[in-house]
Length: 497
Image (cartoon, rainbow, N blue to C red; front, top):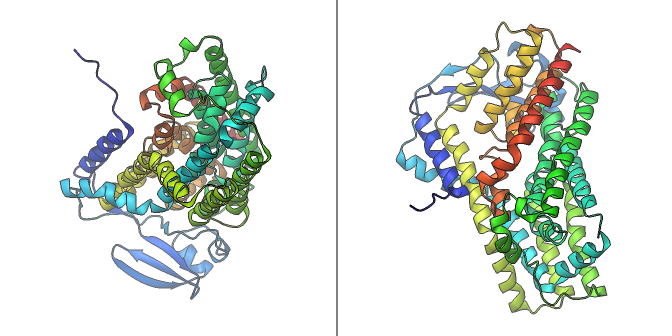
C-alpha cells in the first residue's frame, strides 16, 4: 500500500473553498449597514442592502448611528474603508454558492489579488537575475566565513528585524521577497530550511500580532474603536518584547539541535532536494568583486527604498513592484547581461514563483465565496452576542478566540478592524474595561491564528521554501501553545488593569 501524501497548498485551499461554499447553504445570510466617508463632497454614504443614501459628515450623524468615533478620524483619512454600523444586522435572502461559483472563486481571487501577484512575479524575476550574476553565491560565501562559529546571530537579527517591521508598518506580504535570499545563507550556516522560514514568518507574525504603531492594525482599529492609538501602547510594547524573545529562543533551540545532528530536522528527507533547489552546492563561487558588491548594494537598496516608501510615503503594491522592477534592470546593466539573456532569465525567475502567486489568488478566492455568500457579517453578529454576561477576564479571553476564528473568514487586518470594531468595541463599555482591550484582543487573536491560517500567507511562504503544511504544523504547534498561554495571561492582566 502506497503512503498517502499530504495534499499540496493549492489542494488544501480548494478543499477549504469547497467547505466554505457548503457553509453558504447552511449559515443564514446577513448584512450590516455600512457607512463610507466621501472626501470629494465631505459627506457620508450609508448603504442599506442595495440602497444608498447621502448623510451630512457631522459628529451628530455619527452619534445618531451609535458610532462613537470622532469625525476627524474620517476626514483626515485614518478610516477610508466602509465601516459596519452597530445594531443594523439583518437576515437577508440566502445566496448559496453553487458549483459554478466555486470554480469561479479562484479566478476572481486571482484577479482581486493581482497587485500582490505581480509583486511576487517581479520579485521572482529579480531573484533570477541576481542568481545569474553570481552575486548571491559570492555574498553567501563571504557571510558564511564572517559568521563562522556565530551563525546563531543570523537567527536573532533576522527574527528581531522582521518583527520590528511587523510591529511598525505591518511587514507581511513583503516578506515573500526575503525567502529566496535568506534561505541559502541559513543553509550555508548548516541549518535546515525550516530555520529561515521560522525566522522570517514567525518574526513577521509576532511583530504584527503585537503591533505598536502599525497603521494597518493598531491605528486603524483604535480609530474605528473611537480611542487614541497610544492608549494601551505600553502593554503592547511589553508583550512584543516577551513574544519576540519566546520566538527567538524557540527557533534557536531547534536550530542548534539540527546543526548538531541534521537527522533531527523535521524536513531531513528533503535536505538534498532543498539544497539543490536553492543552489547551495555551487561548484565555482565567484570572488566578491567590486561589480558584485555594487550589485548586492543595489539589491539591498531595493528593500530599504521599499520599507521607507511603505512606512513613510504611503506606498503600496504598485510602488513596491516598481522598485523591484527598476532594481532588476539596474542589476542587469551593472552585470552587463545581454538583453535577450536578461529577458529569458527574468521570465524564468518569475515562472519559479508562479505557483506561489496562484496560491495567493486561490486563498483570496475563499474570501470571495464568503462575501458573495453573505455569511461574513452573520459570523460577526453571532460572535458579538456570545459574550453577554461574562466577567472581565473570561470576556477578554473569549474575544481573543473569537477574533482568532473570525480571522479565518476575514484574514485582512485592516478589513477586520473596520468591519468589527464599531460592533465589538462598545461591548467593552458594558463589561467595564477600556476599549483598548478589544483592540488588543483583535490583534492578539488574529496574530495567534496567523501562525497556521491557511487563508493567510503561510501556504504561499511554504510553497517558496518547498515545505509541506503538515511539516510546518509539526514545527509550530508547540510554540503556538506556548504563545496562546502567554497571550491569555497578558490579556487577562490588561482586562483588570
